[in-house]
Structures are given as structure tokens and as C-alpha cells.
Length: 144
Image 1 (cartoon, one colour):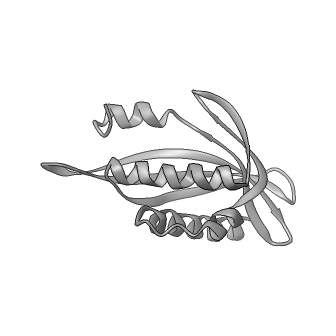
Image 2 (cartoon, helix red, strand yellow; image 1 turned 90 degrees about the vertical axis):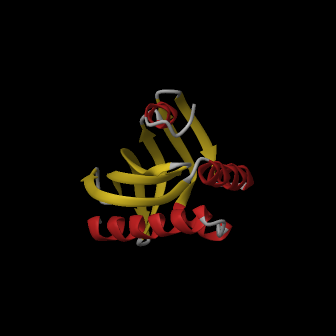
């Protein structure tokens, strides 16, 4: 399962960076996620569906990332913890680069833990656990 998960996240990172450029493919977005998902952060737990609301949220999310100067998202490392033949946790270490006015770009490292399901050779995200993104961005002066 690990090679397919690594390949999936290479595709995911490519999708993310193209979307940062304003070229979000909604069909590709839908192909990355299971029909339903769960997300957890210090702000709580939420559930959602892979539907029009997810697409709209993602469009708005990428617009926000562009607005705050996000230039690039790069994978530093992936570690896969198998659960069974069809499920794993992908621990993905990311580096995000931000442009700032009158100051050099800044890179920020963070981790996200993705709950993955692979059926018929197709890995999909069915959940994730992330830290406090807004606090991290405030700490580095990206947002107030």
C-alpha cells in the first residue's frame, strides 16, 4: 500500500499547487476524497461529504491561501502506518512557502495525518488530523 500512498500524495501536492495558481480541477478534487470524511483539529471535529459544498469550500480555501501569499506547498516526508489491507494513516510532513511584502519569503513546516482507504487500487482520503493552522500562521506573521 505504501507506494500507492506516496504516489497519491505526489498527485495531491501537484493538485494543491495548481489550485494555488487558480487552476482547480473539481473532478480531480472529487477523486482525492472518499464519499464522506472526518476532520479533527484543536478547533474540534467535523464531518463532511464529497459534494458541491466541499468543492465550494475548497475554492474559497485556495482563494484565501492565495490572498495570504501562499506560493508553494511541498512534501518533506511521508510515513505510512498500516492499519489493515485497505486502511492506513499517512503522516505527511509539509513545507508551505509564503510571499510577504517588503520581506523575504518564509517557509513553514507542519504535519497532517491523513486517514486513507484504498479500494480497487485507488487511495482516497477519508479523514485528517491537523494542528492549529491559524495559530501557526499568526506565530509566523502571515495572518494577524
